[in-house]
Length: 214
Image (cartoon, rainbow, N blue to C red; front, top):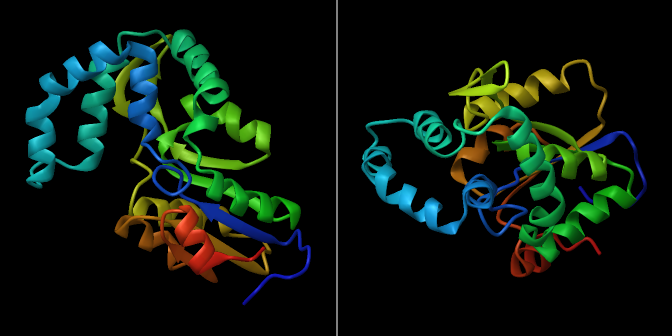
């Protein structure tokens, strides 16, 4: 169904990494905080865990926690918060595909609510989302006072957890039509909930051939 009229009672739900952005923002944020050399040095140190992940021995959540512990737990909360705000302003816009921005702008013009539903974290996304007026649901990390524990607070916002979080958000909301955008098989879980799902990265080719609402 094509939405040809302005309707503030619609919502568009977007995965971020790979769908809107050309790179994984978690890894790019780690690189921003630690520098390129330490980032790649860390990849060597963490490579056994990466192999275990691809062998199916450890889960996505555990690998994410190991990366956070290695790269970010030695930084204080205030420092990470400041770096996250800088990243949102200076780096994140350049990671967003122009073709994805066209889709986002279309929904904005139509006065649809826009949600970013992502496995990445508000630590480095919140300021960008706030500046755009986007709703943000993502992965949260535990902290004690001014230090991070390295563990995820709850579950990683990935796969079926994305679906659960979206279901909880939509309860009691009176949206008459819903859109969803994701690029991986794991996004199918939340895309099953929306009226108009798109399982594709928002590249110029995909936007032109499979979405074109301009």
